[in-house]
Structures are given as C-alpha cells and as structure tokens.
Amino acid sequence: MESCHKHPLHPFLFVLFLCMFFFFAEAAGASIKQRPFNNKVSAGFVFGDSTVDPGNNNYVKTFFRSNFPPYGKDLKDQTATGRFTNGKLPTDLIVSYIGIKEYLPPYLDPTLGIEELMTGVSFASAGSGFDPLTPQITSVVSIPKQVEYFKEYKKRLQSAIGKKRMEHIIQNAVFLVSAGTNDFVVNYFTIPIRRKNYTVSAYQQFILQNVKQLLQDLWDEGARRIAVTGLPPMGCLPVVITLNSPNAILERGCIEKFSRVGMEYNQMLQNEVNSMRGRLAHLGAKILYVDIFTPLVDMIQGLGKLDFDEVSQGCCGSGYLEAGFLCNPGSYVCFDASKYVFFDSIHPTEKTYTKLFMANHHVVDSVIQDWDLND
Image 1: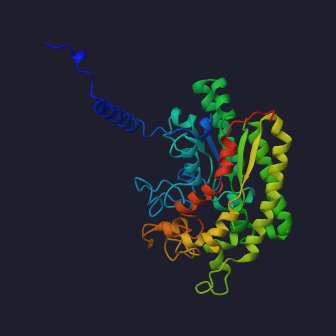
Image 2 (image 1 turned 90 degrees about the vertical axis):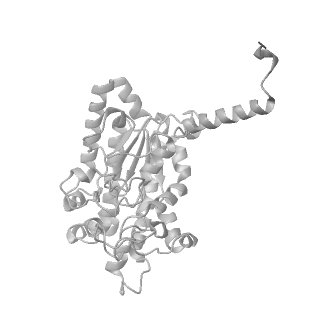
C-alpha cells in the first residue's frame, strides 16, 4: 500500500481548501464584528425622551406609548416594541456600531437578565423633558427619576458581579442624553403656565440649568463619556407646521420662529458642553455635543431632501397630527417609510435616524476612541 506522503495535495486543491476554510470561518463568525478603533466601551446608557425610549413607557401608566402597530413595522420581526418609529432608534444604531449589541433595551423591562443589563440599557421615557413640569403633563418618567433608576441599576449590578466590576463597566460606558423638544413643543409653546413666568430666553436658560444638573449627576455617578444631543428644527416637525401654519394643507413650510428658538438654545448648550469638557478633561471627561439640527434641516430644506419624497408630513395617517395612540393599527400607513423624513407627526423614520447617525459619526468615534489624557 502506497504511503500518502508520496502524493502531496495538489496546489489548486490546497488553495480551494483554504478558501473554503476561511469562507466557513467567516460565516460562523459573521455576527462578530470588529469593533471600531478596537474600543473598550463596556455598555451604553441613555437618558431622555421618545427619541431614545425603546419601550420604558410600556411599563408606565401613560397614554404616551407606541407598543402597537404600525410602530416597529420595519424591525426584523415587525414587532411594536415601544420605539416611536418604524424601526431602530439612533441608540440602537450607536450600540450596534460600537459592537456592544444590536438593540439597547428599556431598563423597566422586567425580563432583562444580568448579561443584558451589563451591556447597557435606556432609562429614557417618551414625553419626558428637562423641565420638571413636562413629565407631569404627560405622566411619564422624569429625568431625575431616570437618574434614580440608574442608581438602582448600579446597586443591582454590584450585587450580581461585585463593586469593582460594576465600577469598571460604568467608567468605560458611553452615556447619551437626548431631550428638550417636549419642554418647548408640548410644554412652553402649548400650555401657558411657563410663559407666565418665563420669557423664551429665560426658559432656554432654565432648561440649560437642568441639563447642567443632569450632567453633574451623571458625572458624580461615574459617567466619563457623555454625548448630549441638541434640539431639532422644531418648526419643521409636521405637528408644529399643522398647528401653526396659516394653511396647514397647502402651506407646509417650516415655522421659522420655533426653529430659531431651537437654534439659539443649541448654541448655548454647545457652549456649556464645551466648557464642561474643558474643565474636566484632565479627569478623563469626554463630553461632546451632538448636532441633529443641521442635518435635519438639510434633509427637509436642503440638498438632502432629494433622498425623500415627503419631508413635511409623517408616514402614519394623514401625517399632520397623528402620533402615539393617534397612530394606531387602524391608521393608514405609507408603503415605504424610507421615503419619509418622519414616521408620525413628530418622530423621524429609521432612515432619518440613520442619516443623523452618519452625520454625527465623528462625534461617536471621538466618544468611543480611547485617548491619552496627556495629549
């Protein structure tokens, strides 16, 4: 019987074998992505409103919910999770990009196990805001309460994995804050209570003080990488156009005075964030401002609008007023939400959120990339 050593593997067969090996190896690990910058981010934590609430309001006694169709219609299992859009939220896109997990779940979901908790959750509540009055109007979770939930979370984590590991997770986590629209649109400009005591300028300062308090609270609890989102062009929200246009059917242009308020506030917020980062940089702070105003204006009024068929009304219902329970299983829904900037009369579509993420890609990269404090 001849020895196998007399017949070495043909070079072509050897190359084919290697190709097959790497193909199957890649297929087996297809879900394991290379982390950008080989970052060491441990988890993601989120505070804010409906733009980043993946379903906490499902567990709160409020009308501000979206755990029913057509919300979630473009998620992979077409499930209405409580996200106020047709698909993923920007926070889902961020944690997926970082390499933590595909979706960031709501903290109040009682089924979350310790492994899920360890990689981060959202504490955000749709309808909330920085003004203490705003969550009272909507009966949702206030931002101070969201911070209390975070403290509770830390205790739960410490009891499960120990104090040292818990602190390591917090120190290496990314924090995102996204709120403020409800304070102006739902509260200040709709209900007269705050307008009796605050000018627009004074109210902007009042909201800013509450943002500063939140950032200080998060810092005190161990947050070191924080991204803070500004306001959108509020005058371009379909519901704002509908309620303030002289002819809501024929004149669907942005209401400039509302957007101007947001732009002024954003400049003050950006200055404060830059100042805080400068003061705390030597202690390891990475506190950055996220601009959603500029890219949204481009999608609605600039060259970016060429990517959409509809920029001034939502995909759900008439697109003029429907949001939350008014956008429901009985509502008309557009065939292709990716043709729309907004899914309902307030909230962007997944495509819009994706474009906002791409526009702020550099901010995300800066937050997650490790740096030398002596640089």
